[in-house]
Image (cartoon, rainbow, N blue to C red; front, side, top):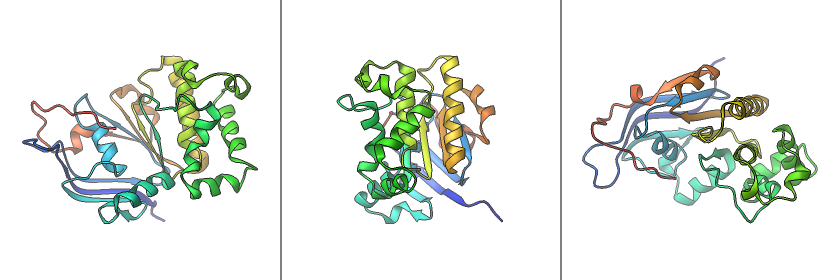
Length: 243
């Protein structure tokens, strides 16, 4: 039986406004359910832009983007927002934790905006808070210690693991991670990746992981060079980061 395709991109072209050349020009990209994809490329190659296109945050000039069988070009902005909230999880390079929320409240947050994620959690946990604490504990964080700290007072490694628990919360079908290890030292990075992979394997979550650090690629199911699949002329053009 063929693997289920959760992401399919064809004939994608994306340009920034007033740009003289496209930043992205990708003929084909498919990702299967449960696959761990490592996408790499130098700064300015369009990695973050591609993630935002996949997430429905940015609109391509042309092309087809199907996520879990849904054609994003056929969805309104509000439908895209809801779809993203129901079926995707994100780990941002700068974490994007809410400073006025506790670690547990940050992890629970995706379920506050998605009845689907909330329902999934409550199928095997007595409360959203219980599941948030379970994820934090599995990521080697002490819930008791965290309950007395503002998230901005946590170490970089602790904040990264809180962000990971939030991304996994509600069992999204796809997790998109944008340079999530760039601020971690080598020891924390290794344990972080191990635990992220364990959660993805447990729930058959597809992982699209972006980094410029090619050495991480051996840990993934498939390594994709953006420079090899992107036909856009990148000469003299630098990507403007967009989140």
